[in-house]
Length: 152
Length: 149
Image 1 (cartoon, chains in turn green, red):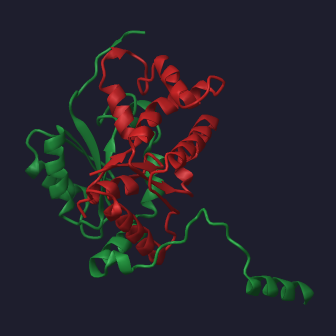
Image 2 (image 1 turned 60 degrees about the vertical axis):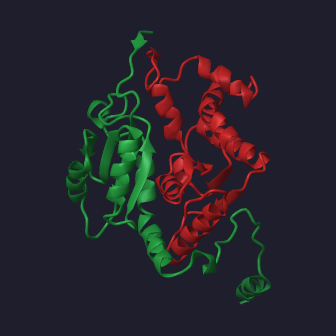
Image 3 (image 1 turned 180 degrees about the vertical axis):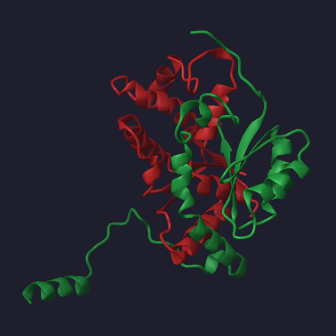
């Protein structure tokens, strides 16, 4: 085992993911460069990766969110951009972790719709989703339909 | 502002919502970041050292595979510091090897045993479910002490 010297100590990296009909990752990158005071910004196919000290990063991210609050999503990343242990340039294939992002990306249009509706209505008046842990029982009408189908 | 554990711990949507409505998300990235920014011995890819499975003994017994104990060294402290949790029950993206699967089960068990407020959901499959999903999370986070929303 050799000695390990970490890079970018004291910084945080965040993904800024965009799925907007009106803004592209390139627009987001230009705005991020305008706002940045020395932050490291990397444009990707799904948005941006921004690395900076936490306060600076929060400032940039909160300004970027304003561009399209219902279609921009942010999460923290463990590794800085281009890290050889995660970067697909070194590994080949998709970056580990991209598949998870891709799986959630399919749900983002529904989530964005929910956020848009939330701006028009009160969340408290919206019906609650069903509890997934609640045991689902077969209703009498469904049972009757099944029996009728079997008898025919 | 309270600490909210999210499951799946790598979720973009949950992490965003917790932050958006004024709380701190406890996700995998926090634990990984801590490790890769700490100087020590080279142990790629995520700087998990042989010490980690030993730390995991706090949450899993010695006969539990080291893969589970190692993972628990990341998630265990976060579960202990969580004041609330949001769990998406049909998260296919949390699928993994036996180590991941058993760790996921242990995470759920430990969260429920702590008796903290837990919101159970499934991912939306259409726009109507999307509305309910977002509203449920917002109501839950607003109900926690100190939320900014």
